[in-house]
Image (cartoon, rainbow, N blue to C red; front, side, top):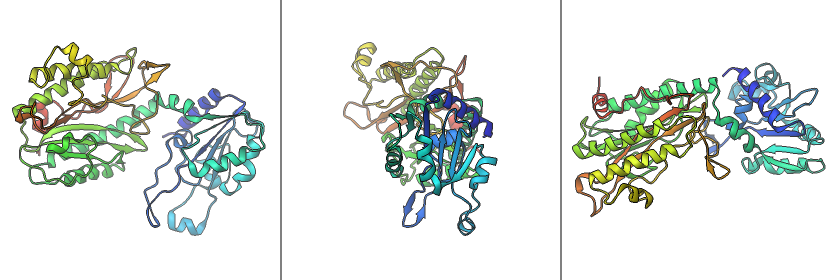
Length: 425
C-alpha cells in the first residue's frame, strides 16, 4: 500500500487525539510455535494501520504538534550477523526513507527517549492489556511525567478503521478475488472418497499461489460436521450424498476475505438439501439488500431471520405464526449465530456494533460479511431426510452510497450454478 496512505491516516489520527496527547504503538512480538520455532510473523493490526512497518521489535510514537518530529519509529538497528540469518532489516535509515518516519532511533534507546517525549503530554493513547510484555515498561516510563490519563487507542483507531479508504477497498477486493478462486478450486476437486484435509490443501495452495495466507483456519465440514459452527478437525472422508460446507478466506497484504459456500460433493443436491439451501440463499439475498447506508447494523440480520423463520415453517420444522416464532426466537436451534461481522485488517474487524445503546447506522465505506445459515441436527421432531444438513452462504459486502457491492459476487451460489461448478473441468 502506498506510504501516502499511512501518512494520511497518521495526520487524521493526530488531529483526533489533539496536541496535548501522545500515542505509543508497539509492534507485534515474535511468537513461538514450539521450542525455538517461530510462527510466521504477522504484524499487529493497529501498528500496521498507522505505520505500514513490517518488522518486530519496533515501537511507533505519534506526538502531535511536536516541532522537530511528530512521527517517530524505534526499530532494530542493522545487525550483519542476525540479518545474514533473517534477511535485511530496514534499520533507522530505512524507517525514515522507506516508511515515512520523521525520525527514527534504535529500539535499545527507547528507555532514554520515550519518557522525555511523554513529559509534557497530559494524555497517552495506548492499548493497555494488548501487549502484556510491554505494559509494565509503559507504566514505569509514565512515572514522573505529567500524564494524567491513559486513553484506549481503540476508541479512536477502531472508528477510523471502520471506514475503508479507496486503497483499503482495493485491498479487500484483491483478497476476495483470491478466495473466490480458492473456493472454485475446492469445488472442482471435492468428490466422494476424498478427505476434508485434501480439500483444505487445495484451498491453501490457491492462497499461497497468490502470496496470501489463510485469514483463519479453514472450516471444511462434510455431512454432520457442517452442523458444528467452528469445526476444525478437517479429517473426515467425504461420502456420496454429503454436503460440504467450506468456510475459508485469505489475508493478502494483511487485508482479509471471508467466504462460505455449501455444495454437494457428488454434484447434485437431494430435494431436502436443496430446500434448505434455497431458504439460506433467499435469506442471504434479503440480508445483503439491507446493507445500505441509512439502515442500521441489525437490519440485515432481521431480514435473514424473517426469511429463515418463514422457510422453516414451510418445511414443517417450526409450527406457529411467523411473528410469534420470531418473537420467541424459535429459529435459534437451527440458526444460532449472527448474520455477519465487520471485515478489514482483521477477519473479525474492529468497530462497535452499537453506539449509545443503539445499533450503528451503516455508512458508505463500511465492509462486512453476510452469512446466514441453517443447521438441522437429528431430532425426533425433524424428518430424517433433513438430518445433518448444514448450510451456510457467506459473502463479503462493501456498503456504498447506493446498492451494496458484493466483493465475492463472482463465486457461484445459485443451486444450479453450484452444481455446474462442482467437478467442472
